[in-house]
Structure formats: C-alpha cells, structure tokens
Length: 336
Ligand code: TXA
Ligand code: MG
Image (tube, rainbow, N blue to C red; front, side, top):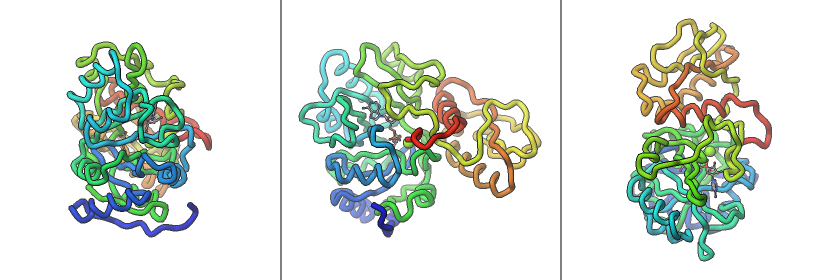
C-alpha cells in the first residue's frame, strides 16, 4: 500500500453515504465522522481491508480495532454472551447505545469479524456510535466496520474532516465529511469479560455515569498502568510535535498555553479549552486545541505546550488521560 490514492471528499448526504458504503463494501478505506472522533473505516469482515487500515495508519498489528455496528442486536450477534456479562451488556446497551461506549466482550465462534481486526484475541471491542452520519453509513454498509481514529498512529486524533485530510490524504480512498465531532474524545472502553467490569480507556461516557448504572467498575487510579488486557494502552499517544508540560500554575513566554478556566497570562500563544470550566466543551475542543498550539507554537518558535489543570472527574478523566499520553516520551512502537 505505498501507492498514492486519490482521496475522495464526500459530503454527508444520501449520495455521499451511498458512495462511502459502496467503497467500504469493496474493501476500501473510508474515514467517517462519529460523535467522538473521525474513524478510519474498513469492513471488519475482511482481513485484506483491515490490513489496509493498519498500513495507512502505521499501526502495530497487535493492537486490535473496534468494530462498529448500527444497533445492539447486530453487535451482540458477534459476541458470546452469558451470565453476568450478558446482563451487564444489555443494561449498558439500553442506557448508552447508540453512544460513546465500547464494550469488550467474548468473541463468538461464529463471529464474522476478521482475526486481524481482533488481533487474534478471544475478545472483541464493539460499539454502536451515535453520530447521525455514522449510523446511516453503518446501516447502508450492512457489515461491521472496523475503525480506529483516522490519524497516523501516535498523533493527535482528528475531530474534523480537515484534520483527517491533513494526516491521511493520498493514503485512503475517501473521507465522508459530517462536520466537527460533538464529543471530541474517543469512546470509553469497558471490559465486561472479567468478574468486575474494567475501565480500559476513559472516554465520552463518564466513569460516574457507568457506576451509577452498573455499580463497581475497576479502573487504574490515574491510568498510568499499562493493562495487559488492553493492547492499545501504550504510553505515548496523541502526541503533538512540541513537548507537553502538565498541570502548570505559571507559564513562560516561550510556551504555548492550553488553558482551562481563567487563562494564565504571559504565554506565547493560547487556546482555551473552556473559559467557563465546562468539561463537555473542553473535551470537544481538546484535539483541535492541541493541533492549533502545535502548529502555531512551532511557527512562532515556542518550545513547549503548557497545560493548565483539568479536574479529575467526569469528562476530565478522559481529557487528562489524553493529555498525559500527549506528554509521554515517545518511541517508534509506542503508539496506536
Ligand atoms: O471513539 C472511538 O472509540 C473511535 C471512533 C472512531 O469510534 N475509535 C477508536 O479506536 O478510538 P482506536 O482503535 O483508536 O482505539 C481502540 C481501543 C484501543 O485502545 C484498543 O487497544 C482497544 O480499543 N481494544 C480493541 N479491541 C480490544 C480488545 N479485544 N480488548 C481490549 N481492548 C481492545
Ligand atoms: Mg486512536
């Protein structure tokens, strides 16, 4: 897949969705907007199509992909459900699907999802997205669609079609443009295959909301652990090219500032996640802000991105997780 492709830009109308579905069914790569971030879609039932996703992203193959389906029924048809897992899966699907929650479930022996998408694991990550275009596309395709975030592995996730284009133009067949993503951080990944559910990745559905519905959820305190069960939980991720300094209480003139609430004064460039300390607004503005400060900071010769503290609750948990990974030292194999 070193060939340069002509990336079609499709609008999110009936014709665009139909064209996107046709390309996907042919085994081609189509980026599409969901409520969280843009996904790089390929039909999940074809090893060949899925292999193209790994190649276009430069993603390590041991890191499995989420399969997207139009409803809970078609999602659960891919899984082997019984006992408490089944009970929890149904409660969570009724409450949060369609929406930014991914469930890790035992893979059914009759699942049609390719081994490569599942990275050979006995489990599957399944999600029913809420974005209108994503839902229409999935219905039109009629097959599970594997979709990691539509960016080169290890870089900042895309929250609008322009971000995708900048990162993957010429490497994918089409982009279905449904405008900016409303949630702005990826889905919450919850493993239901253990005794107690485990939060593998904080995301668009908050830990508080999960706990309210299903009770106890295990989670690493601040997501500094790498859980073996979650191959994608590798340290460096979401990395801008400038280094990132977290939880700052003062800022230098040679730093770009990612502010939250009242901005610190004196930075070389500033992007405020939310002046009113609204975490939903902050999540929606996070990846665009990192990109802006990275580009603007580099242009102005700044040294670093400094980040004001974001609280550790609700969507703040997902925001802090992404920021912490953006601040990690980078290695060639550390990304997803
Ligand atoms: O919001 C989202 O989830 C976006 C949109 C496009 O839907 N997708 C996304 O995919 O973020 P990706 O590939 O960037 O992240 C998938 C995460 C990774 O951390 C991966 O390791 C984990 O889900 N995952 C996938 N299958 C898994 C499995 N069987 N067990 C544990 N973790 C799994
Ligand atoms: Mg990703």
